[in-house]
Image 1 (cartoon, helix red, strand yellow):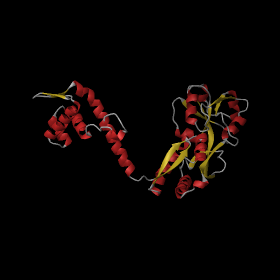
Image 2 (cartoon, one colour; image 1 turned 60 degrees about the horizontal axis):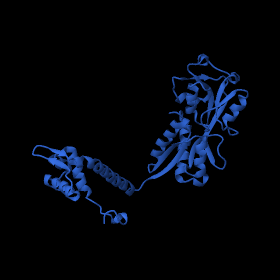
Image 3 (tube, one colour; image 1 turned 30 degrees about the horizontal axis):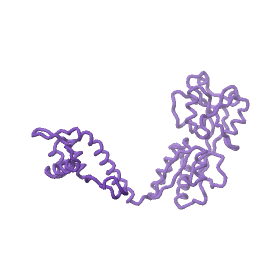
Image 4 (tube, helix red, strand yellow; image 1 turned 90 degrees about the vertical axis):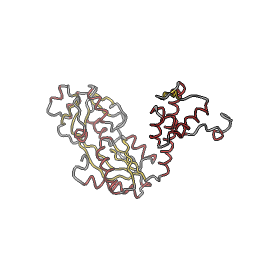
Amino acid sequence: MRGRGPYWAVDPGPPLRDIGCFAVVARCLSFSRAAVELGMSQPAVSQAVARLERAFGLRLFERTSREVQLSDAGKLLLPYAEALLDQAAAFSAEAARLAVPSGRTIRLAYCPMVGSLAARVARRFARRSPGVEVELQTAGWSTATAELARGTAPVAIMSTPFPPGFATTARFQVPVSHLAVPASSGLARATRVRWEQLRAYRILLPRVRPPGSVWAQLAARLRGATHSPMGSDDLDDLAGALDLVAAGQGLLPAPRLLVETVRRPDVHFLPIAAAELRMTYGLVWRQEQASKDVMALVQTVQEILRTPGGLTR
């Protein structure tokens, strides 16, 4: 009985083949053209539409010797037919995808600022291990730490301080060499700035500054300056902080890598004299998840960093 009992006992209704014939005739407004498109004979298409009309007691098309037009009922039912056919096609495509065994994947979380390095790692690793796919995930310091702790990302490229209990390698340093200032400000016309001058300005720093991080060192060095939050609790959301710089809400000490990879007409990067502070990055992974694939990824990062221009090329 229609509408009663479990879903597998419900009257399935007309076959999708007949509904598909109706939808194609409605698009072509011609039984002969629809038959060519479907690879069927014209009588077979006409019979499919006729079965639908008998099943529902409705007239789907108004036919004359010269033309075929949708009836009012046909116009109302066509969107439902198209949606049903789309769902059936999606079902078939997903079933086909699931029937093919998927390859292995390994997730690499990485700080947004080292995106070019992460992309290069994925490209080289694909050549090195064709059966394994690197899934790239942008993750600032806080997110990367959480991903490593949960085990959802076995490997991360992140800044110090590295979370305790994890293996680390492939360390590299990026100097904090510039100050990001609004391009429209008078300060943008200076040739360089000294650290002690920054105490007179509002400086953007993350709210969370773990001991040992360059941000903790900057906060200590700029003691007495007005500090404003970067807009994110994450240590690595420097690209987002540039929006605040452009809006005139503060100045941002910027690592050289940011200066080399970001071009914004509303932000000027002013060199800092004697810029000895450095941000340290490295590859961090869970030792208990040190599979063959993880170690191959570690070796790939090490190889890239040993080549000239490994960070940005």
